[in-house]
Image (tube, rainbow, N blue to C red):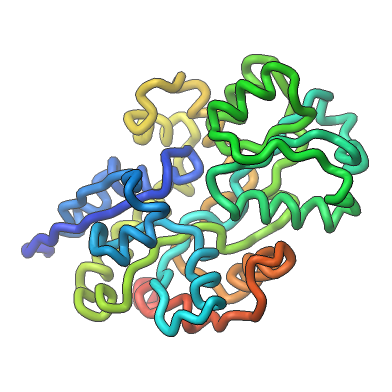
Length: 307
């Protein structure tokens, strides 16, 4: 029985239904039941991303794309934050177009105007990978880059682009409003990749292993519950994180993510998914050389959990 309690500072990149496993772990009481008093927040504006907050001592464990540790390693960093538990095992972004999805062909992207995700480089790298593999020449595309999420949606609503690239629940909102149609679910196209995961510094992993073990145990229980729960049941647990969003949109977003297998059944971050993500980074020119799995990932905590 857990007696001693630990305070743990947990941070996410931004608020999206894509990160539902985190919200289930926090709001479902799974981390608390392991003796963790969690201070959970979205990355403050003074940090460009959660790994920066981690390196500045503002968090203990963060949600982050593994991309950032791979890139830091490629730039020459001898030590990078290590990722130890998977959150998203597929891309969670969608392409919304103006024509019904059943009539879509990849050639429709040729010479089109696209609004790609502008707040993080990874979603666009993944979208580019899908375009190239489907025979679409990037040189012929007109891109409206650098827009915030709300600006991007407003531009699409005004008819300034043929396609827009979005996470949930923003994609679901456009579909519900009848503004666009689902064209591409990138999670289905690009397959299983280590898209997003929990990371910590080596100092924290080595210095507070008991807290990390408890975190992984609680998170594993949350994933188990999530795998068996309906979209409506999941919405009931996480809707407090989206106070201004219609619960029906949250439920629809969760259902779409569950249908494509976005969230893993266990927290183990595998070598194959890591390789798939790194292939996307190299294809986008974001990484020059292959970075070792063992430098960026540790499976010590998930392997013990699965035994």
